[in-house]
Image 1 (cartoon, one colour):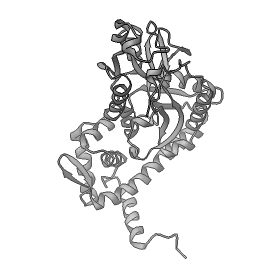
Image 2 (cartoon, one colour):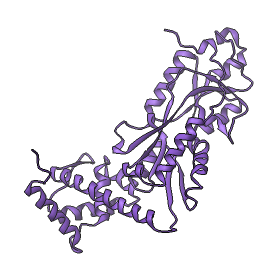
Image 3 (tube, one colour):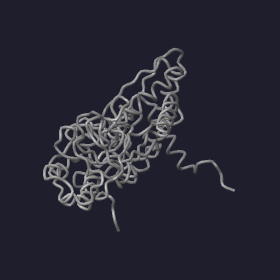
Image 4 (tube, one colour):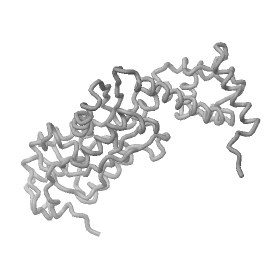
Length: 346
């Protein structure tokens, strides 16, 4: 029968760390522990300093001071990258417990304080913030009338940096756009967002089998100019492979940093764009001035990303439930059937 008690040596080590944290002159502070945690989850001091909003020299001083206090080297520096030593790995496990406990304490005190105002700190993609979030906020407003919001419109990589830096507690992004192991945050699936080929309203593709035969030269020129969203190497390659297979004369003549900007270029008649459905909605209505054709392309998997303890805390839990409900009842824009030339063949 296994004992739930810690081995004596491990217990003594933990007790020693706790006593050090408790002493004012120990040099182990929450600020240093948070700096250590950020560096341990980054591949460089530069990235960690960005996540924390700290100058790199200050961050280096925090790490050096912590190493001096614990009496052990916590990182090995190799080619401008930081790797945990055995002592660093041991400390990281304990630090994560300490930080999680402190976060739960802070959140719990805020939650039970009578009449206190709570702020939900979140970041996400433009389309999710515009289409899903307002309805979800309206649904929980009656139960939580004193909530206010701090909202950042951000790219997926920036959302993760904000989470690491503890400047937000909830991210709304596409799971396809982040590494599967993205640093241990909980991912709650919200919905699948299907793609369409957006073309100018003047470009009619119904029944087109061979664009070179069935379209006028002016229409062919528009079809062959793609406006692509700079979304990362993997996504860009998938998109270009799709165009190469189905629109082989395609020319990627423009790179945009948001689907919304790309769609405005399409509306202006400058080209075509592969876009997710949520980005085609404005004011609850399908964007006018474009035609949307159904395509065979993997959908975006929209997820809520947050530290695991927040999934059990209000009002974050209520907001996620509301997002799930809104997504389940969301009516996507009307897609026209895929024209024959956009139907993939074996």
